Amino acid sequence: MKYIITATFLFFVSKEMKAQFSPRLFFNVSGGLMNYSGDLQEKSFTLNQSHNTYGIGATYQFWNNFSLTATYTHGEISADDKYGGPSHIPRNLNFFSNINEGGVVLEASLFDVPGNAKFTPYIFEGLSVFYINPYTFDPSGNKVYLQPIGTEGQGLPQYPDKKPYKLLQVAIPIGVGVKYAISNNLMIGAEVCFRKAFTDYLDDVSGPVYADTAVIRASRGALAAKLSFRSDELNLPYHFNSTIIRGNPGNKDWFYSCLIKL
Image 1 (tube, rainbow, N blue to C red):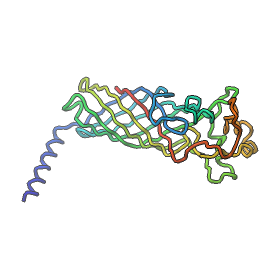
Image 2 (cartoon, rainbow, N blue to C red; image 1 turned 90 degrees about the vertical axis):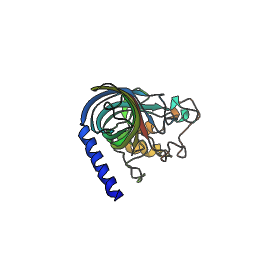
Image 3 (cartoon, helix red, strand yellow; image 1 turned 135 degrees about the vertical axis):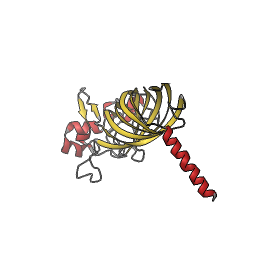
């Protein structure tokens, strides 16, 4: 009997809560900083070498403490070994890439804002699709996109395990934030969002061993060979050697943003 009473009570409480709640739709704009974590960045989280980012989106609050948010984000990531530590500088690699991302996340708030409270922390997780296209500048200052030239031997028969990476990728955004209701129709907030990428080539660096520059030169040309190994541009006693460590395939890339939202 007590289970029937409990079930009946929960049914009516749920029904009453539904009766009291009306779904809300909000639109948002955001701006802040974007950065990445990978082979060319020493720290997992830092604002060093970060870039501006902005986004627009819409949030559908379908329950007191739960919302779905769809967002478009534009940003940029980059890193340069010359700003790294002693183990990074001799490698002398760098990259830049714009990021265009569209995604949907499920957001869970501790309190119902702007319904029953003015302030709440929240967490979120979802799925996104983003486009990257890493590039660098050659010694003459010319912009060169890195994916087509296969700096690690991608697509060459001598390296059958190296496949060209895709520029359109999937990520899992996950993060935390806080928001404050200025009024029933206006909120301001701040959040940190990490994206777990399913590629190790945000920075065009993954493999632990350099591809043979002679092989790349014969197949892709002198420029591709030059940009695959850049230690020789420094006034240091470094010459090409296929045993030199280039990257760490076990340390997958992330990118993240710190945002103010309205």
